[in-house]
Length: 349
Image (cartoon, rainbow, N blue to C red; front, side, top):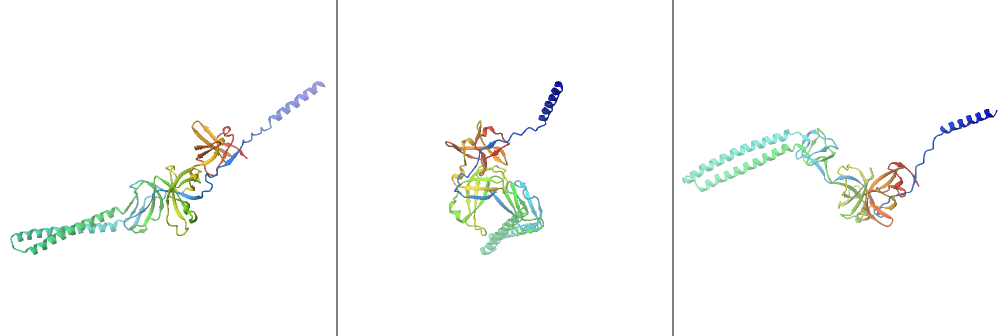
């Protein structure tokens, strides 16, 4: 009886041990971190919404009119200086060149005749067969024929140049940012058919209301935040329109970017903050900095995930620091940053 009871106890213990093995292990909760929202370094400064533009935007047009035969590029295409972008019908221009070329031949023949007559009458005058007044007349005819010949040559050169104007040539490397004419369309000389945004410097164009116009001056520092990737850039007010837009009644201003990447896409939405303080950066606690060798970073929380974002420290104070590279409105971790890993899930409080 005692042996049966002992076996029963062993069986019960074995079943209990097996049951424990089927229980799911509880997942470790994500760490709880303290956070803060990065505010504007200059809260009193007004912010403006703008778009990234090229410093040099060239409106391309033909120097002669005609019908467009071909368009060789699409919007957004990157072109090189010397590329043929559009071609118009050159038949009328060719006929004009033929006519001026014939005028050159005619004027040359008239000049040769006038010079021959002048030489003949100079011989007659030397023989005292004609008066000096008559000789002066033939001298004048020769000078007039020479002037007519030079005029015909100049007109022929202009017509020859016009043949080259039937091809629309890119004057610099850049991107085709707009197209306003298509194949088969008849355009006039000087009519804009394309917009070429040259490679190189990038700017942000903003609209300034009348009420804030007096607060902006050329050269004023600016802090720029890109909406697409939260990148933080710096710049200054390069240009301010003296007259408002006729529809919106706002003044266009251009912000030159001093640290924009060369491949910064055109048209990106940007937020611009103006003023001396705006360009200094964001003030954060020293405890938020994650230092590795000579590189500083800050953990930014997005959708419950902590991402390490590199920053540049411009100033140190007793308990905080001024950094650039953080987007305004970003949520950053202010304590326990050395316990986190890039891409780790966190809980905020």
